[in-house]
Image 1: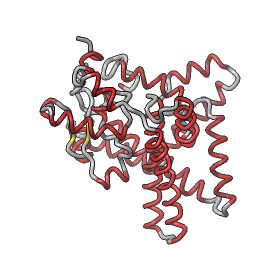
Image 2: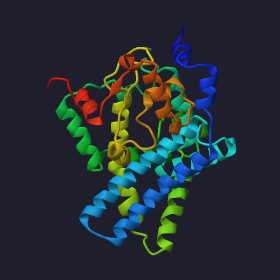
Image 3: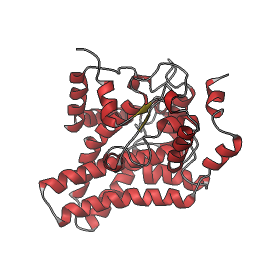
Image 4: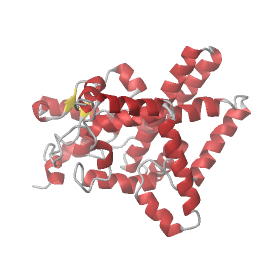
Length: 315
């Protein structure tokens, strides 16, 4: 039995059809919720400016920037809206481009990850294979993320790639195939970000763009992307077992607010049926537990537990 068939064997065809139902209402609600939290965090700092509310806003906005990437990820699986046209438009311009990601390039890349999960052909293997690592190595990565070093490095590479490939369509297409969240095209992303900057400037708060959009994107967002990657495939089996080569991590309200938005923590269930909308994943998780699969599933009891495992290598 192939890995793809074994994933499908956990559910009946009717169950898959039921949980894979798209909802235009839920798609619109999640995007609205994401942007409402972003602008709400900005408004909180304007209303009550102090170091605490600034740090809180950076963390909230950075987590929602990951939220936009997660909703783009749903759109990449055509699971965000029932309408294909709406799915493509919202995934590209309301979710991906604001965080300098491109839906179509990401889709081509990401589907290869699903096809070859935790094998040598997995394009995401470079993200998971270094784990477990040492505690000091993990801390160095976290410090680089929070101080903006990771974000600046990635954006510099992105800009250089865009400049180098500009005008060379074949090279640009090849580069897109080798990227995940990065967008070597950049042009549309810059336009969307210019619109965001102009909108904030029109209401008299242009400085919110560098202070509470770019700064979270270069810091907290980079950290939660790293935590997401570690939790999903770090220190799991290097095999084609769909219950062991990917992890679901349990998360309470605070972790969902600051680290794991829009059910991204239910990653094992997502790999079982990748076109299920993210808001249906908790139901799939409960169904798997009710059917007695819990002892066979890779489940992290918390993100802290996963980080301890991921940094358990002896120095």
